[in-house]
Image (cartoon, rainbow, N blue to C red; front, side, top):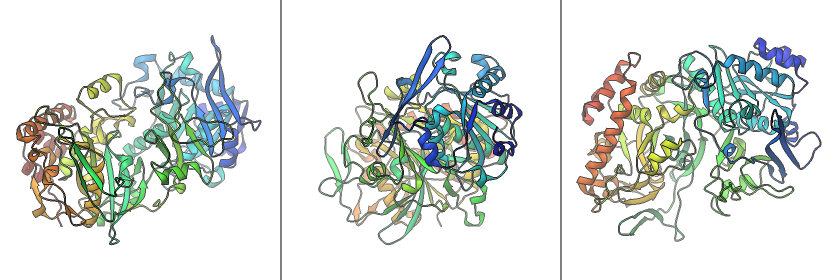
Length: 634
């Protein structure tokens, strides 16, 4: 074992593994690690192959050197995306997630076997800081040398650091990679095991796609650390919006997968004539567009994992402060199908300052990897999960300093609702809600309307495809949490109550009543809130929504001198919807909330949380929610 590793305070079994390892490479730079991704011979192509007992050599991935990075592709379609059922808990600490022992027996023997297998490999060991370079916790990754691309992906996401920069430390989390175990122990399935103690979170990844381990596995570790220390990492994007008059508003956007987190940081889309298409009536085919002479400037703050660390908070401000929990962004580019659809992103990908990592994107030696050339799955269709890892410092206009959040928006995918076919798609273009309702929406986090999410089980996908909703869980970070739902609910309520000056807004995407809107509602809400000055909306501009779960609707909305149709603010006013269809849709949402909220009524739930849930279960009014958590209107 290298002397630098002997200076660390390591678990005894990990120390023994490293002492026995055939060789250990500790890259001195990101460039060295990048080159290792193509093997030790400096070739332009490299196959990641393992000898699997009983099967012989198995190719898990191929790596190709392109002009702008390396393209990593997997022969097995199944490994090209995260299996939503891959998480298993290997310890006995409190958790509501499936236990490894229930499916495979005790984890301890498999853990010992994993470390023994790693001890017979040539290894790459890299340090990183889980939670980003500035506020993160020192951690380690231990991977076979022939999977160096995986380690490169991890440090591109978390930030490259050296052992010299960190000094001696006890790792707070460790990521281990052992791809052959997928075949020898788990029938070919993806399995990621989380083995926790009070001071260490170990992640055993038994598949080579970095999504559930190098990305979301580290998210799990952050959530676990926060559980012990009393804070959360949000599953959210955030952006600083500067109006044409130089007024700044910071918006943080949450929601289930497909809820518009990526879109919150994207420019508003215009038609060829420069107008903004707000929506198209699905019954009449009538388009509705407005003209905006100038829109606000967008400066991204966070993309996916949003750190709400205690060191960032300034209680006297009354607002929650955030920073990026990552040093690179795991960008999904399935929406790019041809040149010119997102010029800024395309420029960052095609002409990067340093070579990038591409996943599920076609790569040819010496050629440029293009973000719209998605590898084909076995059915001949483009892979739905093409990814590029882009360092933050290559994102145009990125904000590096922590920011205080003025408005927390929450996005929900909505189906079309008409009088002839009532659905739950009755949310108006924007709703202002009190903290109690903001908490309820985050407890349930509805996912629906044919969501493109890759994080859905077959049963969930079937429900959504047939017009139903499923709950993504607390704060939409629940799929990655290793802890308990009620514990997460309490932390989330505590976080909301600690920031009384941060405002809360609901915004739909895809449809508003009978109008197909895509993400235009979210973009217009962003523009409106920024122009109101840090999301301030006067009380006289608000009217109680017909559905209490929607809080307040806007009485009117004017942007750049143009009035938005009132029927988009209150869909019950649409001629093709009406009050009967609206009430039917509101009933669907209310019933769904009631069914999902019952599980939180345990003795461990915060007393105020219990009161808020009981208001919903008892068909309470907006006034009942306001009595528990008043709306800040100053």
